[in-house]
Length: 247
Image 1 (cartoon, rainbow, N blue to C red):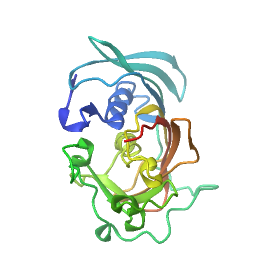
Image 2 (spheres, helix red, strand yellow):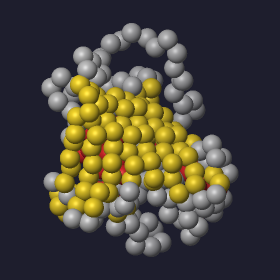
Image 3 (tube, rainbow, N blue to C red):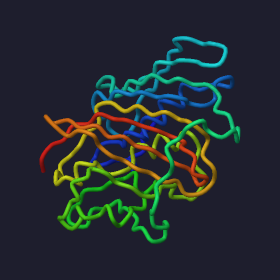
Image 4 (cartoon, rainbow, N blue to C red):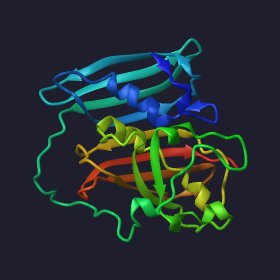
C-alpha cells in the first residue's frame, strides 16, 4: 500500500491513520469490526510504499485476534494487536457510563483547528481530513496562557462530513493536540504506545471528544481520550503513552 503524504505531521504520518490501516487488515466477514487495538510505534515510516502484514493468532466463536505490522525496506515501523468481532447496534441502555461533556459550546461556536501553523511552516496534515473544533475555554495556550489542567475538549467529525464509522474512531482518538501544550510545554510529543477500545458504532453527526492527562514526568506522559456520539453514548476510549521534548 501507499502512505498518503497529506496525512503527515511535520513529515511523519499520523498515528491514527496508520492504526486504521493496521486494524482494517485484521478484519474479515465473520469479524468485521475492531473491538480493541493496541499499537506500538517503533519508528516513523516515510510516505510512499509500505507493507502491511496480518497474522491470525486465534479465531474463536465471537472474537478473532490478529497480530499486524507495518513495515518498509528500512524495517518494522508499527506493530499492533487487533481484537475483532461484531459491534452490535442494540439500543439497550448501558448499565453504567460516564456522561458526555456539559457546557460545551455548539460546534459552530468553537474554532476549527488549522492544519497550517500561523507562525511557521509546520503542517498538521490530518487536520485537513479531520474537522476538530476546540472549546474556546481550552485555547489559553495559544495566547501563551496555558490553563495548567492538561485537558482539551471539543467536537470532531470527518472533514467530508460523512458519518463516522468504527475505523474513523481510531483516527479521531489520536487527533487532539498534545495535552503538554496546556502546561506550557510546546515541543514534539511522539507516541510510543496507543490503545483504543471501540464500544459502539457512532450515530450520525458531530462527536464530542475529551483528552486529558494524569501524569507528566520524566519525559513521558499519558493521554486518555473519550469520544461520545450525537446521542450521548460513549463510543470510543483510548490511552496512549507519549514522550515530550521541550521546544
